[in-house]
Length: 112
Length: 119
Image (cartoon, rainbow over all chains, first blue to last red; front, side, top):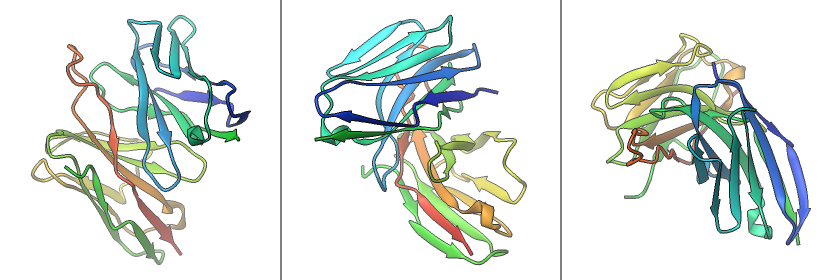
């Protein structure tokens, strides 16, 4: 089955700097790659996603890139703000959105 | 619509007891998922339904766990003869299926979870 790895497990950045989180997946059939943000005491919330027919997607300060050949994808957050502090999960799924498999998470701290 | 609702939010039980969690999804969503999350880990897939049909169940899920969605609306997750290793946050999510025409995004909408502590 699908296995998603993620690193780093923790990341601290100064406010205004960029943060990068990297993930790899194992199942070449996966073609949908969402990213979720989880704040303390809450369920994960989708922040951005990318499908395998595109290599990059951007939404304001957040961008994701996908390299299908290498089976890895990344999340880039620019101009980080304290409210970006949270745990971020990458995930992978096959067409049809059956089960979504999550990575272990990255705890991001943005230092004011 | 108030989103995905889970009850109870917290449950403390003694080892060997049975517990049941309930999830009320967003009403228009036909898919419902159960995940388990332990501290410092990502959500671990348990099972999912499309309408009332249970389409997949994790091989990691022991037979002490059972989930139902009898009318394709709310779902229950029951854990029988609880063990200390069952202590975790149990998350429910709902969605439309990710269709080939991308009309539905496949986004999972999570509830706030039900935290289980087994003493």
